[in-house]
Image 1 (tube, rainbow, N blue to C red):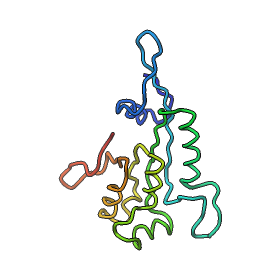
Image 2 (image 1 turned 135 degrees about the vertical axis):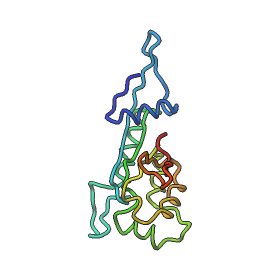
Image 3 (image 1 turned 180 degrees about the horizontal axis):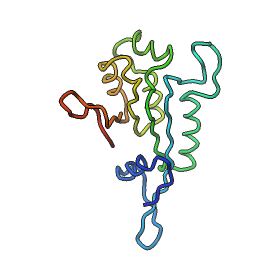
Length: 165
């Protein structure tokens, strides 16, 4: 197996899960060329806008990442693995409203965006715990992709969340 990625473990998991079709290299060998794309520390930035300063922020936002991911998927059909490294549910006024003001059954806007972008997995970062475990559990159930945390355990020693996929 050949993987071109700094996220080799994530790519190997995607291949093992059947997310990416193989290609033959002759001689019975099978090669997988994956494009692994990742986001991290988005902290609720959906659009290129700074909610606190009420000004554009052209460097950040899932909407900016979505354009890049769409281009990657067009150039490498069925070979893009999209992952997030955590710290996405807390960080600005939008995430505060989603956690503390919105109706209890409202879809979290960051999860809605990530579902639309078809993320393959996301790690649970330390800031995912900021609004409490009930909020985190509810938000995880809204995602169409798995949230992963291999190092989070319950007091009885069992894994609190899915460790891998």
